[in-house]
Length: 81
Image 1 (spheres, one colour):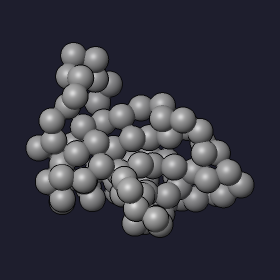
Image 2 (cartoon, rainbow, N blue to C red; image 1 turned 180 degrees about the horizontal axis):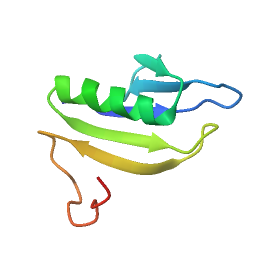
Image 3 (cartoon, helix red, strand yellow; image 1 turned 60 degrees about the vertical axis):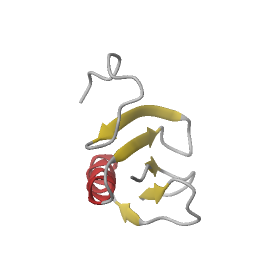
């Protein structure tokens, strides 16, 4: 199980997909939507987990999605996806 963060570093035009606890990006994408898709695929391939999407320019987490077969820590509240 692996968790991933989708971030857009300040001053960058790319979105980074970074494994939680990792030092560098596992992948990059030109759009946030594409980065979310890649992060979900990476998480699914490693047994599921959480994909946390940050606000642009290095901002705080704005959304979090559970990827199967990961366990959603708060299932009633996560009805967006």
